[in-house]
Length: 147
Image: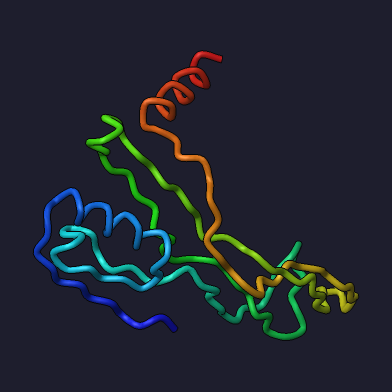
């Protein structure tokens, strides 16, 4: 687990923005007071586990199954660059990095049994993705409505 990090410094605004921007993609559990004012603390991208009985067409898993999901922060940001005179964006998403195919025995009300396979997430990680601007999202939505 990554420790919580706090930085308090008084430097020029452009230098602070550069430092803040450089830390964002790399710190999972981060808090940079003054340096990144207004940026909340997030949990890192990680696997979350739970146990449930699977149900498929009225048939139920013989035992509880460990289900997994990926969730958490990956340091995505958008900020105005004075030097480039435009918005700079870094987009990452928390997603599966390593998975395993597992099987569970399913039991049906009539007593019949069958094996059901499912995907188990072993590891999650932050991966770069395309940053979509609100304008592009709006254009795509309006095109879909016209069809």
